[in-house]
Length: 454
Image 1 (cartoon, one colour):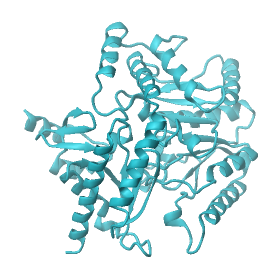
Image 2 (cartoon, one colour):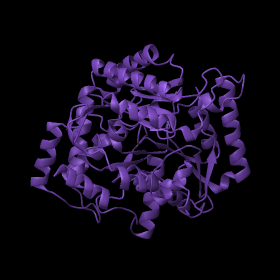
Image 3 (cartoon, one colour):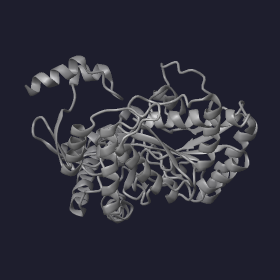
Image 4 (cartoon, helix red, strand yellow):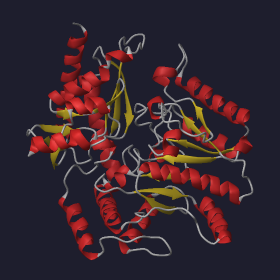
C-alpha cells in the first residue's frame, strides 16, 4: 500500500517548489506520522524537525487539544461563510485575539486562507485607500530584492526571488525593488553596519524621489527575510524606513507570515525591530500550520478611510469563500490561547538563547560556516567557500542542498535556501532536542566538507 501511494503521488501530484522531472524519477519523501517535534516517514525513519515544516508548526506535529477543538467544531458548525454580514463564534473569537495582540492601533482583522492572500489583500487595500483619498496615481509598491511574499500573481510579483518570476510572464504590477538589507553579503569592504544602514536608507530615499512619492502607495517588508536567507536588518534600519515612508505619505506593510506570533522573541517582528506598520499579514503560526488560515491586520486610520469608500459604493468588493471558516477559526483561536498560556515570546527568547549558544559552540568555527544570524527562535547559517573573504560557493555545487541531505541522513530536518541553512523549530522543542538538532547539523557539515574535498 505504501509503495502504491508513493507511486500515485509520483504519477499525479504536481508539487509546489519542486523540480517536476526529478519528482517523476525520484519521488517524494512520504511523511506518514507526527509525534511532538518529530516526523516519521513511510519506512519508519524518524526526523527531528528543525523547520516547523515550512516555518509554521509552532506546537509540533500532533496536538490532542487542537484535534479535539477541530472535531467539536466539525460537529457543531462544519462550514459557513462571512459574506453579506454573516459570521460565527470562532471567527469572532480569533479576530478579537489577533486584534488584542496586534501592535497596530485600532486593528481590524480581515481573514483569508494563506500568507499569499494576506499580502495580496494588503496591496489591494493600499490601492483602495489611496483611491478613497483622491490619490489614484499612488499605485507602485516598493519591495526588496530577495524577498518572498507568496505565490499568487501579486505575491510573486512582490517577491524578489528570480525563480518566482522566470517563465511566468507576470504582468506589470508597478513593483519596484529596494536593496535586500544583508550586511554580511552586501556591506562594502571596511563599511560599518551603521554606515551600511545609512547607505540603505539613503538609497531608499533616492528611489522614492526618482519614482515620485505621489506614485507610490506602500512598501512591503519582512522584519526578518525568511526564504531570502533568514536576513536580519542592520540596527536602526526599520525605524528610519518608517520615518521616510511617513514623510512621503507611503504605507508600510509588515509581512509577519514567518515572524508573527512569537518567533522573533516578541509577538511580532515589527516589535523586535522597533516599528509600527500600517498593516501586517499573518499566517503560518496563526494556526501552528494545522489548518489553512491567515489575515491582514489593518490600522484604524486605513480602515476608516476604506470603510467610508465602501459605504459610498455600497459594498466592499473583496473576500474569499473560506474567509473566517468556522473550523479553521476555532483551531486558530485555540492556538492563540495556547500561545498566551505558554508565553510564546518568552519561550522563543529562552530557547533561542540556547540554540544560538549551541550553534556558536558547535558550528560557528566550521570552515564552511560564514555567519550565524537570526532572532528569537529563528536562525540562519550562511555557508561560504572562504570564511576570511566571505567568498560564496559556486551555485552549481549546490552545497546547501548537500548539507540538507546529510542532515536528513543524521535524523534531523532543516531547509536550505541556496547556501543558507534555516532553522525554525517548534516552540515545544526541549533544550536536549536543540542539542540533538545542532549535533546533526554539525555532523552534516563535516560530511559535506569531506565530500567537497574529494
